[in-house]
Amino acid sequence: MVWTPAEAEQAGTRARQATAATGAKPAAFKPKFFTAHEYATVTVLVDLIIPRDERSGSATDAGVPRFMDFMMIDDPRRQTAMRGGLALIDRLCEQRFGTRFVACMDAERRQILDAIAFPNTAPKSLRQAVAFFTSFRDLTASGFWTTKMGIKDLQYQGNTFVAEWNGCPDEAVRKLGVAD
Image 1 (cartoon, rainbow, N blue to C red):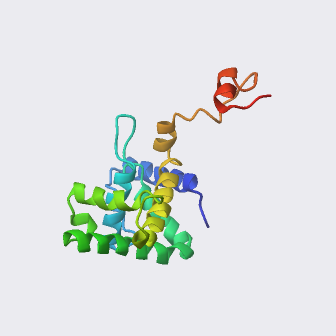
Image 2 (cartoon, one colour):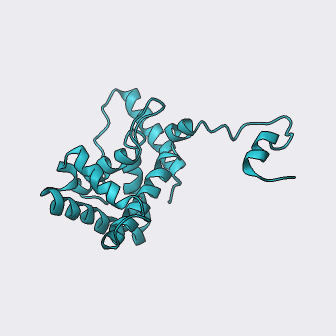
């Protein structure tokens, strides 16, 4: 059975509630795809992409690393690119700083990400790292903003009954530069 991220989250919530009701402590999560080092790298990387702020928790707080592990198992076509990309991030850090990404100082991590986060300004020698990071960032965002925490962070107000729809407000139409 293949679950959507929302269904997976609901199943996880039900499992946590059942565990809490028995008083037992939930077992630590063990990734099915990622190695322990890869999972640690993913955890650090997603929190640099979506850190905890005054409005919501971080990507890890929302369960994004677990989501990514699930996505890798569910979509084998992405597995090689994910493993290769994480290894590439480590290699870049080892070349520049003599250690893997997770062992780098925060400023060093950010230096690596600044070099690969902006496709239009990144050197051609980092083309593969840029492609990996762009895909990884997209997957991080998908994982985060499809959770309850992410939806709350967006202040999403959809899926509510509207008694009367009077069309798009004039201010929004003007801002978008469109006319009826």
